[in-house]
Image (cartoon, rainbow over all chains, first blue to last red; front, side, top):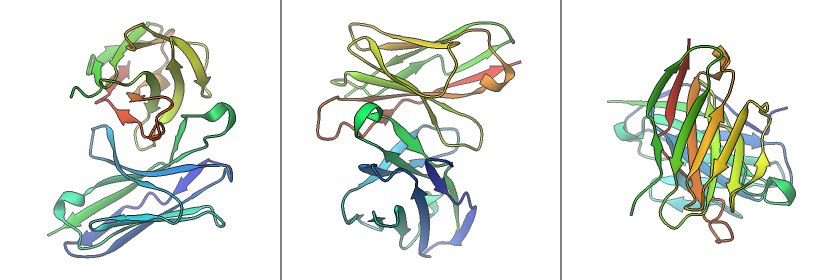
Length: 113
Length: 115
Protein backbone atom coordinates (compact mmCIF):
# COMPACT_ATOMS: atom_id res chain seq x y z
CA UNK A 1 0.00 0.00 0.00
CA UNK A 2 1.33 3.45 -0.90
CA UNK A 3 2.07 5.94 1.86
CA UNK A 4 -0.07 8.63 0.24
CA UNK A 5 -2.95 8.02 -2.15
CA UNK A 6 -4.44 10.70 -4.35
CA UNK A 7 -6.99 10.74 -7.14
CA UNK A 8 -4.87 11.73 -10.18
CA UNK A 9 -7.80 13.44 -11.91
CA UNK A 10 -7.70 15.29 -14.20
CA UNK A 11 -10.10 17.87 -12.90
CA UNK A 12 -11.33 20.34 -15.53
CA UNK A 13 -13.33 23.24 -14.10
CA UNK A 14 -14.48 26.68 -15.32
CA UNK A 15 -13.16 29.87 -13.85
CA UNK A 16 -14.94 30.74 -10.62
CA UNK A 17 -15.71 27.14 -9.72
CA UNK A 18 -14.98 25.51 -6.40
CA UNK A 19 -12.93 22.32 -6.56
CA UNK A 20 -11.85 19.90 -3.85
CA UNK A 21 -8.99 17.42 -3.77
CA UNK A 22 -8.62 14.58 -1.31
CA UNK A 23 -5.88 12.28 -0.22
CA UNK A 24 -5.36 9.56 2.35
CA UNK A 25 -2.19 8.52 4.14
CA UNK A 26 -1.31 5.15 5.62
CA UNK A 27 1.07 5.97 8.48
CA UNK A 28 -0.92 6.93 11.56
CA UNK A 29 2.27 8.32 13.14
CA UNK A 30 2.51 11.04 10.48
CA UNK A 31 2.91 14.46 12.01
CA UNK A 32 3.22 17.01 9.24
CA UNK A 33 1.06 17.49 6.20
CA UNK A 34 1.41 19.74 3.20
CA UNK A 35 -0.03 20.62 -0.16
CA UNK A 36 2.52 21.40 -2.85
CA UNK A 37 1.78 22.82 -6.26
CA UNK A 38 3.75 21.76 -9.32
CA UNK A 39 3.51 23.49 -12.68
CA UNK A 40 4.32 21.58 -15.83
CA UNK A 41 8.01 20.60 -15.94
CA UNK A 42 8.78 22.73 -12.89
CA UNK A 43 9.71 21.95 -9.31
CA UNK A 44 7.12 21.46 -6.56
CA UNK A 45 6.42 24.58 -4.50
CA UNK A 46 4.87 24.64 -1.07
CA UNK A 47 1.27 25.82 -1.30
CA UNK A 48 0.33 25.43 2.32
CA UNK A 49 1.02 23.40 5.42
CA UNK A 50 -1.81 21.60 7.18
CA UNK A 51 -1.60 21.43 10.95
CA UNK A 52 -4.01 20.13 13.58
CA UNK A 53 -7.54 20.99 12.45
CA UNK A 54 -6.48 22.60 9.18
CA UNK A 55 -6.05 26.15 7.94
CA UNK A 56 -7.11 28.70 5.36
CA UNK A 57 -5.08 30.95 3.08
CA UNK A 58 -7.17 33.21 0.90
CA UNK A 59 -9.09 31.06 -1.57
CA UNK A 60 -7.43 27.88 -0.33
CA UNK A 61 -8.58 25.81 2.62
CA UNK A 62 -6.86 22.66 3.84
CA UNK A 63 -8.44 20.22 6.25
CA UNK A 64 -6.97 17.31 8.17
CA UNK A 65 -8.88 14.41 9.68
CA UNK A 66 -6.43 12.38 11.76
CA UNK A 67 -8.98 9.76 12.72
CA UNK A 68 -9.67 8.96 9.08
CA UNK A 69 -6.09 9.76 7.94
CA UNK A 70 -7.55 12.04 5.33
CA UNK A 71 -6.42 15.42 3.99
CA UNK A 72 -8.32 17.75 1.71
CA UNK A 73 -7.70 20.93 -0.25
CA UNK A 74 -10.52 23.24 -1.29
CA UNK A 75 -10.00 25.93 -3.91
CA UNK A 76 -12.72 28.55 -4.17
CA UNK A 77 -13.27 30.97 -7.07
CA UNK A 78 -10.79 29.12 -9.32
CA UNK A 79 -8.48 31.21 -11.49
CA UNK A 80 -6.79 30.26 -14.75
CA UNK A 81 -3.50 30.53 -12.88
CA UNK A 82 -4.57 27.73 -10.52
CA UNK A 83 -4.04 25.21 -13.34
CA UNK A 84 -1.30 22.89 -12.07
CA UNK A 85 -0.73 19.55 -10.38
CA UNK A 86 -1.45 19.49 -6.65
CA UNK A 87 0.65 17.13 -4.58
CA UNK A 88 -0.43 15.82 -1.21
CA UNK A 89 2.62 15.40 1.01
CA UNK A 90 3.09 13.72 4.37
CA UNK A 91 6.00 13.53 6.77
CA UNK A 92 6.27 10.95 9.55
CA UNK A 93 8.38 12.88 12.02
CA UNK A 94 9.18 10.17 14.50
CA UNK A 95 12.14 7.86 14.49
CA UNK A 96 14.27 7.31 11.46
CA UNK A 97 11.95 8.96 8.98
CA UNK A 98 12.54 12.46 10.28
CA UNK A 99 12.54 14.87 7.38
CA UNK A 100 11.51 12.38 4.73
CA UNK A 101 8.55 13.50 2.63
CA UNK A 102 6.08 11.09 1.09
CA UNK A 103 4.31 12.41 -1.99
CA UNK A 104 1.10 11.38 -3.61
CA UNK A 105 1.18 11.09 -7.37
CA UNK A 106 -0.58 14.44 -7.69
CA UNK A 107 -3.96 15.63 -8.92
CA UNK A 108 -4.01 17.57 -12.17
CA UNK A 109 -6.25 20.64 -12.33
CA UNK A 110 -7.12 22.62 -15.45
CA UNK A 111 -9.18 25.77 -15.09
CA UNK A 112 -10.76 26.93 -18.34
CA UNK A 113 -12.09 30.39 -19.22
CA UNK B 1 17.89 35.43 -0.93
CA UNK B 2 19.32 32.70 -3.13
CA UNK B 3 17.02 29.75 -3.56
CA UNK B 4 17.97 26.14 -4.22
CA UNK B 5 20.06 25.75 -7.36
CA UNK B 6 20.80 22.61 -9.34
CA UNK B 7 23.07 21.77 -12.23
CA UNK B 8 22.93 20.78 -14.96
CA UNK B 9 19.31 21.46 -16.00
CA UNK B 10 19.28 18.71 -18.60
CA UNK B 11 21.46 15.68 -19.22
CA UNK B 12 21.45 12.89 -21.75
CA UNK B 13 23.38 9.71 -21.04
CA UNK B 14 23.50 6.17 -22.38
CA UNK B 15 22.94 2.96 -20.47
CA UNK B 16 25.85 1.91 -18.31
CA UNK B 17 27.27 5.41 -17.95
CA UNK B 18 27.66 7.31 -14.70
CA UNK B 19 26.25 10.72 -13.85
CA UNK B 20 26.80 13.37 -11.18
CA UNK B 21 24.15 15.94 -10.31
CA UNK B 22 24.80 18.96 -8.12
CA UNK B 23 22.76 21.00 -5.69
CA UNK B 24 23.32 24.14 -3.64
CA UNK B 25 20.81 24.60 -0.82
CA UNK B 26 18.89 27.74 0.00
CA UNK B 27 20.94 30.26 1.94
CA UNK B 28 20.91 29.36 5.64
CA UNK B 29 19.80 25.75 5.12
CA UNK B 30 21.97 22.83 6.20
CA UNK B 31 20.05 19.72 5.11
CA UNK B 32 19.72 18.43 1.57
CA UNK B 33 17.33 15.76 0.36
CA UNK B 34 17.22 14.19 -3.09
CA UNK B 35 14.09 12.96 -4.86
CA UNK B 36 13.43 11.19 -8.13
CA UNK B 37 10.28 12.06 -10.06
CA UNK B 38 9.28 9.80 -12.92
CA UNK B 39 6.81 11.10 -15.49
CA UNK B 40 3.28 11.20 -14.11
CA UNK B 41 4.35 10.27 -10.59
CA UNK B 42 5.05 12.14 -7.39
CA UNK B 43 8.64 12.59 -6.22
CA UNK B 44 10.21 9.62 -4.44
CA UNK B 45 12.75 10.08 -1.65
CA UNK B 46 16.27 8.89 -2.47
CA UNK B 47 18.29 10.05 0.54
CA UNK B 48 19.00 12.92 2.87
CA UNK B 49 22.29 14.52 3.95
CA UNK B 50 23.04 16.47 7.08
CA UNK B 51 26.46 17.28 8.55
CA UNK B 52 28.08 15.60 5.55
CA UNK B 53 26.51 12.23 6.36
CA UNK B 54 23.69 10.26 4.81
CA UNK B 55 20.97 10.30 7.47
CA UNK B 56 18.13 8.51 5.76
CA UNK B 57 17.74 6.48 2.62
CA UNK B 58 14.75 5.51 0.55
CA UNK B 59 14.26 2.33 -1.42
CA UNK B 60 16.95 2.93 -4.02
CA UNK B 61 19.84 0.61 -4.96
CA UNK B 62 23.47 1.23 -4.08
CA UNK B 63 24.01 2.57 -7.60
CA UNK B 64 22.65 5.79 -6.13
CA UNK B 65 25.14 7.51 -3.86
CA UNK B 66 25.70 10.99 -2.60
CA UNK B 67 27.88 13.41 -0.81
CA UNK B 68 27.52 16.61 1.14
CA UNK B 69 30.29 19.17 1.35
CA UNK B 70 31.22 21.48 4.26
CA UNK B 71 29.40 24.36 2.54
CA UNK B 72 26.21 22.20 2.63
CA UNK B 73 26.10 21.70 -1.13
CA UNK B 74 25.50 18.15 -2.30
CA UNK B 75 26.04 15.74 -5.16
CA UNK B 76 24.01 12.80 -6.33
CA UNK B 77 25.86 10.09 -8.24
CA UNK B 78 24.23 7.34 -10.23
CA UNK B 79 26.34 4.48 -11.61
CA UNK B 80 25.54 1.94 -14.30
CA UNK B 81 22.60 3.94 -15.62
CA UNK B 82 19.45 2.10 -16.65
CA UNK B 83 16.68 3.29 -18.94
CA UNK B 84 14.42 3.42 -15.87
CA UNK B 85 16.65 6.05 -14.28
CA UNK B 86 15.26 8.61 -16.71
CA UNK B 87 13.46 11.12 -14.52
CA UNK B 88 13.49 14.58 -13.01
CA UNK B 89 15.91 14.66 -10.08
CA UNK B 90 14.96 17.17 -7.45
CA UNK B 91 17.03 18.56 -4.63
CA UNK B 92 15.29 19.98 -1.58
CA UNK B 93 16.82 21.95 1.24
CA UNK B 94 15.69 22.59 4.79
CA UNK B 95 17.01 23.73 8.13
CA UNK B 96 17.29 20.91 10.63
CA UNK B 97 15.98 21.64 14.08
CA UNK B 98 13.96 24.62 12.96
CA UNK B 99 10.27 24.60 13.73
CA UNK B 100 9.60 24.58 9.99
CA UNK B 101 12.20 21.86 9.39
CA UNK B 102 9.77 19.71 7.52
CA UNK B 103 9.02 22.45 5.01
CA UNK B 104 11.43 21.68 2.25
CA UNK B 105 12.24 23.99 -0.64
CA UNK B 106 12.90 22.46 -4.00
CA UNK B 107 15.35 23.35 -6.72
CA UNK B 108 14.35 23.44 -10.41
CA UNK B 109 15.59 19.90 -10.92
CA UNK B 110 17.83 18.10 -13.37
CA UNK B 111 16.07 16.24 -16.15
CA UNK B 112 18.02 13.07 -16.91
CA UNK B 113 17.37 11.07 -20.04
CA UNK B 114 19.01 7.66 -20.41
CA UNK B 115 19.13 6.27 -23.95
